Amino acid sequence: MLNTRVQLEPMLDYVSAGMAFYVTMLPVQEWILEFRLGYLGRYWSLISVAGLFIGFLLCALIFVPLIINMTLDPFRYPNHLVMSGIAAVIFGAILWLGQWLILRQTEMTPRIFALINTVVGISVFSVLVWFNQKSLQWSGGPIEGWKTGLIFLVGGTVTGAATGKALDFYCGRVEQRLIKLERERVEQETQERERLKRERIEKEKLEQERLEAEMAERKRIQREAAQEEERLWYEKHGKDYADYEYDEDEEEYEDEDQEE
Image (cartoon, rainbow, N blue to C red; front, top):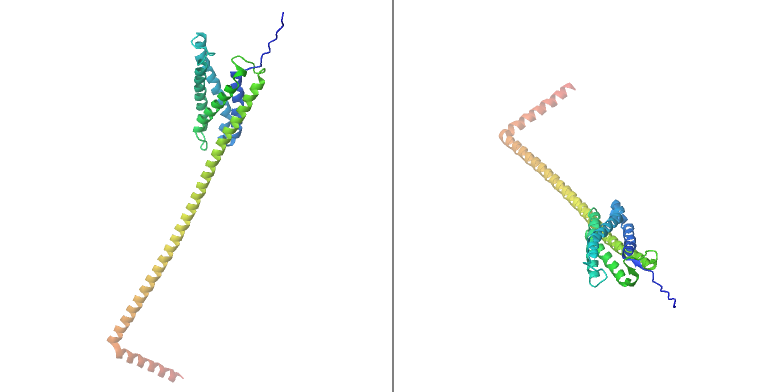
């Protein structure tokens, strides 16, 4: 009797692989985007994990009855591809909705990042699953398959860091552009105020010069009118007025001599 011992390779289940991937990806994104998301950033991982849980329940409600009724065999081609596609759509839609609800509350972060982040996360996870098919099964053990789990942990960390840093870089560029536009706007407003001030001073100066010119012109006209009036008076009274003034002067001189 031959004693044959079969050594089985430790394997990881798909659910544990997904948890390992997203449990590192989402907190890393939250840590990087903490400044960009503000107080809403603390709910980034919570809402995303809640979305994954809801997606898991929806997939279970869809696939379990089909598998029990033998309508769908997850181990046959192309049934497993169809199931993966449906699961990806469900998880993607719920993840996108949760992250979009957070991003729409901020001004700096683009709403499209929710869709991009969801697509990138599902794509990277699918690639990791594809390359680790031999180490994955429907009912594996997360502790026994720790080596495969470590691969998904590292993959989630790298994906979260890459996508989070990409959004942070984009927000930084947008912030710099807004600061530049604001600086240009303030500079233009300052220049406009200075121009209006110069125009006002120039206008006041011209107005003052115009008033002074008008006053000088009025004085000149008044002086010419007075001179003309004096000339006409002399033409009318002429010599008699001059002789009268001369007699008054002589009488004053005589009175002064008598007093002495």
